[in-house]
Image (tube, rainbow over all chains, first blue to last red):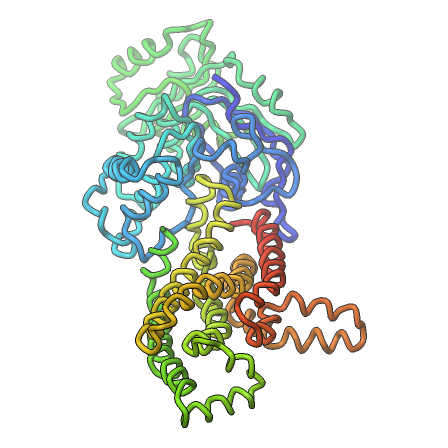
Length: 319
Length: 260
């Protein structure tokens, strides 16, 4: 693995407001990376800076060792820009093959490449259509298709599945997983379950500041404005406390006490009566999951799901 | 090639091209053809020649091929005017809908900016070649004995008209970066051309050194070129070349730092 993205003191100011405030981090190439945060947190601004669409007010951002926007990155990174539309006067095939030609494909290869990525997005039937004839979801899939052309080393996907039907959202997740070995994806989304399934690491932005950077399933590293990227990575060591997440089929008010009595359990957090997050010492009881199954069987309590670790939502938002 | 497809595929592109074709078809087959025939004849010719005298365009009377003389007069003014509208949307619509974002990850901003300029210059050159070819056909119909002289003057006319048109296209490249709508870019270009000279002269009456800015008003040399033969007119080419380079460098400087 090598350093993919390095940001040092990245700040972007629009008028009187700071969209990004002294953001510093480093991420390695490899597993997909999630970028999360509430609306207005600065996710799209960070994407725009990394893709070279907009310059930072101050600070430095490098991808694959080159400053963003430099010619060395041409063809090596690609992006799904938010709200960008294709030319309404040309067919989908004409536009994608033109983009492929800009990436260095020959005329014949560019047509094949355009067909390939449209097929990945299950859009082979619209190659001769113009963009105006497509639905919102289909337009988005065409935009994702262009991001998958060639062999980019980094793909920036800004809200890739927002507005898509479940079947197509699933297809996009599958494509990301299939390509994850050769391409690193940085994915911005509000769908935490989706990110949890796809990504190995998460960056959490809030009000323009990087609040946390962590491997998914591990303890968050809290960032301050003056954290260096090195400090950020140091915080991703395996934690002393481990977690099990349990979801029941029905609410149960007495299970809480029984869970606390299990060996090694240090805390139990119950949500809405049917969801439990169990904090425990792994060294003390490495087979707590088996004990938990026994307890549920003995108590005749049916469960929906048992997961090692916390959900991404719990990791980021549970106080 | 993509530039040509985009220009002619859009509704606006088709409209401007349609207007261009109709205008030039009318000009070539009526005024230019009529004026050329009249200048060769005895009766009508005297009227046309008197009109040229009245407009201060006596040198045009000395042209061996009146078809090209009238074409020269018309093209020097019409091509720049058409190029303003044909080249108005080099990037504005695409920037507004975010389409430039698909391009900047695949080629440099310099490629996009200068590529668009060259694409539109290629369109203008194609149109010039077509109109010149038709004018040559008219010459063949009216005065076939000048076929060789006609061929010799074609490249000179083409080169001159490319030079004259280029600062107008470059001005639209600059306005494509700075304006937020095609309509506004067209409007500002007309204001620059119509009011530019007036404002500079007014300012120069107080600060005389400002009169040098007249060199940056596109088409400033056209009225002088009409009086010259195409070969002599090439000597004034440094003005449009300088204007073109100035507009392009300024436009690229802005585009390089622009958020898209």
